[in-house]
Length: 122
Length: 372
Image 1 (cartoon, rainbow over the protein chains, first blue to last red):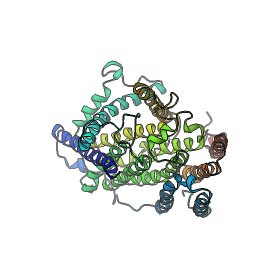
Image 2: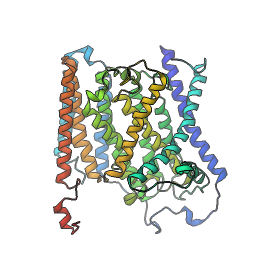
Image 3: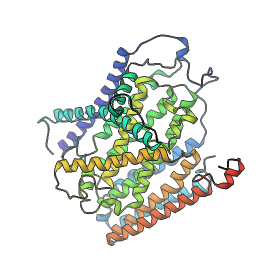
Image 4: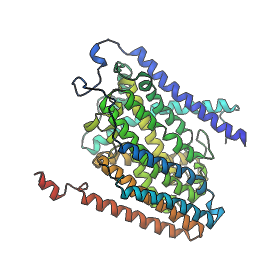
């Protein structure tokens, strides 16, 4: 069994290496084939033809963080749902209602966020 | 499982080599298909001049992109900027390991294939945020955070609809899930999960109508704005490979992959034909959506995900739980899930109509003097 699991993740390791090699070889191929002419104007970031004004790493609106936090909550819930999903029929009624309570608590949280207007993009 | 070579390392290497050869060829072909299909749908001819029917257009594009100068902004954060390309492409390769194409053609048949695929394919989001941050460009930064917000939001309905299918099959192995569908594909039992999966999948691919992270008329390409030549084509490659993978996953989970409608033990060539037909049907559907549906605004996009898709995805899970725990007949699943899918469609239609997304409704049109 362990060798089976090991066998699967060898392929994952090799896939990862292949991904890096493919991108790397494309970049190296580009390095060999492409022309290079230095010019001070080429290094300016694109801003519709105007010279960029101010810093680009500007502040980002707070609402992005709220959605990120909501995502974290529901993503962790999804992680708990996966093992439950494949075994709740064997475990029977009780497992189902326990998960229902868990989903209910988080659904209440979503409802609260909805009521508070977090889900409205303003 | 048969091995291409006795050594597992060599076997994995050989299989991944086949994938690594197929990926660029497939992407070159798909760019041609997409341009041709969209051209036809817009009553144009699409590429015509390079080769017969413009078939060699993709190769010409590749040569052009390879020989293009690699321009990088001087003020870019160099490690982030350079690494972003890898972070976007590598997870796509890693995800390809988990997708079985037929009963015999796959890289590895994973016991947790579905879970692994969803986990790995979401790593690419980090790459978009990195590209947006590293470019030192206002458009790129805005596109990067938009990509982050959209992709993480739609991740949840996508995962939950996959959980619904896993509940039905009581397995996370894609192979087992497909083998269970030899009589009836899961779409018949899970219409609601299917609709949610398709909408969320389309959003995960950030294609129109969900393309605000890379919208040309708003953020001029978003995170990719400062990437040129071959680097940009890497973004394109990742997008097309994920398009194929999501389409393949949809046909495995909901349309019965290689077994439905001919049963589990049909010939390998028939299995290949079945998978190619189903996967291409989804790819063509995604391309069709691209030309027919207008882009959603970011507030509409987030509202669709959090206020409509997410509650309905939970509803599907609860329906599945009730039916499976109390061992109700399977047609109740069809009826309950179908009714919920219709209800969701009705809600989306009502909301869209009221806010004037569906048509430029007369009221809104008259206000701006745009009566056509």
